[in-house]
Amino acid sequence: MSKKGKESYFWTSYSDLMTNLFFVMLMLFILAVALIHGQGAATRKELDKINEIRDAIRNIDTTYFQYDPVYKKHILKTKVQFQKGSSDIDDLDEETKSELCAVRDAIKDKLEDLLEKDTNASYLLVIEGQASKDSYPLNNQLSYDRALSLFKFWFPNQENTTLQFFNLPCEVVIAGAGQMEGKPRDEINSANQRFLIQIMPQMGIIE
Image 1 (cartoon, helix red, strand yellow):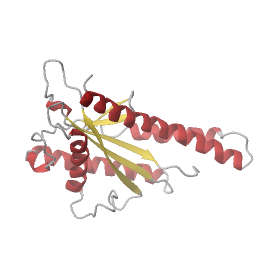
Image 2 (cartoon, one colour):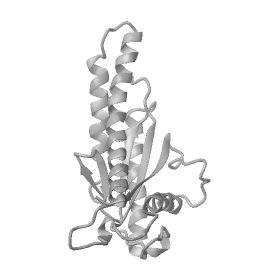
Image 3 (spheres, rainbow, N blue to C red):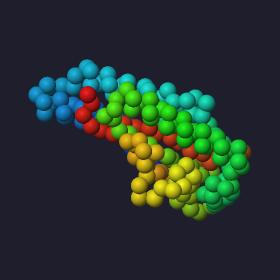
Image 4 (tube, rainbow, N blue to C red):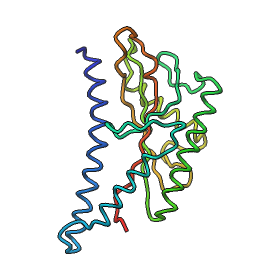
């Protein structure tokens, strides 16, 4: 495997590992809280609440999202076609940009629905960019820049230091997965220019 291929595999695997570790740590946190309160183990109610949140997040609008149960991420169905080495949203046609705005609104609707059921909850929204397998030497940085460009497109007046999703209790994390492997007969494989979206509850006391 080439050096670039190893870097791509590392960053993709790292992202997937961190997602799974998050939910492991969430479980451990609940167990720790239960022990502190002298319960000896997490109550069934608390564990059911965790599973309820995870299931609710999975059921986001399937018009725009496809859930990957293996990696526990939502793949954006919207096809994005950047120029080689570019993270400029203006590379995309008006129809694609319009659909990306609809995606933002779908996420907002899902978060508002979740917060209506639990007004004390707060969330993390991870926007993960990806790049094609090509000869561009900075694909790791490029994938991050593309994710940041999407956020700036959604919220053009927000400062980079305040990555908040509307006025909701939802912080935004920008991530890049580097270049993705192409098909054997398609070295560039521009279909791998895409965004992955993750919505995760922030750890806290679940009531």
